[in-house]
Image (tube, rainbow, N blue to C red):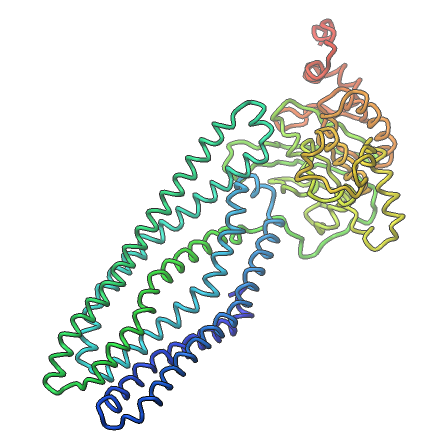
Length: 584
């Protein structure tokens, strides 16, 4: 209802039009009864042609209202489809990163595309016809009682098995439908993973293995569809055969009643004509029931996403820091994934990054560096403790304000299928209404600092549309554009998660030299995996098993921390002096 409410009147109108169409169809047997018992019985042959004309007119009106029904429900169905897609996309954008860490992208794509399209077909077609056909069947049975209550009762009694098989079908088909939809989500995941990983698969010659896994998933999906088809065919068999059996029984009883004068020939003819009109709606119930169950399963799958609450939201009373200095403080910060992990990934982090200071964050793999860099911008929320930006808890700030003040560049650079210009200026919403020369200046400066001037050599320069995820560029080129994007945002705090790992030594040196100018006035938290990156920093924080083990300058930590010396030696091409290790 939140998505369909504004268009329900159009859907209800479609149901009403469908009922009028059914009424015209049911009017044809009434005209036939008058024709058989009137002109055809010899009482007034001159009325044959008017009766024929009436039947033709009723048929034309039925066809016209079928057309009107389709036209009426088409627009609201597409509107509902659009609202669900937009709301789902918006919800996915706002859900925490932790949600996306757990969900397969193929499952999300399947639900956002296939399931939403299924719901549109059901709203525009299945729901309207299920309601209108059900009412038409009730109306038709009521008309049958006007011809002969005895035959109508016989017809209903013989039709009881349809309800039994329909109930069994519903219980079985609902589970099959959900299993098939989930399986096609897994198939979509396989396609998405293989497309994005095509270089790896080809480089290692594992295309056949990927095809085998895909074929296995697709085969299971095919088997589930076959089982669904068999279940639907079984229901269709009973929905076709049982009414025909009921009509055969009614024929025997009807002939007997007519022979005893309890039923006229016209009434008997009209009874079977009405039953013939009801045959279509009765047979459609099986398909419509299956479509309804599939739509129900699709709605369940969609609302599984909507039911995930967004825990990272704007506060009711947001606070804005009075001074924009860029001070960043971690106070007793703990973080634990919500998946029941036994230990905290961050276990009591206390760290102060002064305004304008560059703090390098180093640590062994799995020490919690990436999680720590994601907390200031609230990609994740702390489990315990707090993070202060200019003296204000980041959870007390509006997300838009917070993420304008903090910019990030990741080691795994993600670019979008858009122009270089739009990728680099992604975080500068304020430039949209400003003169082009101003945005060009910001763009040129960011590209220069990130050593990304190679974009001017692309076919359309900065207006070149790069491929999906920027895979048409090298890893180093993608990283430089991602770094330029973070620099162009002109934040108070710059968080860099090893942004130079894919650069060669000479390019890295030039980027570092340019970065020093930027970082001189910007607070920065830099995850470092190279000694050269550490040298950019004013101070270094050593992260060990979720705790800050030591803080100081590079020279101070070399002198005071054996763990730091060991870690730096593992990062450097030059071995550390063994005497220093012994002296510790």
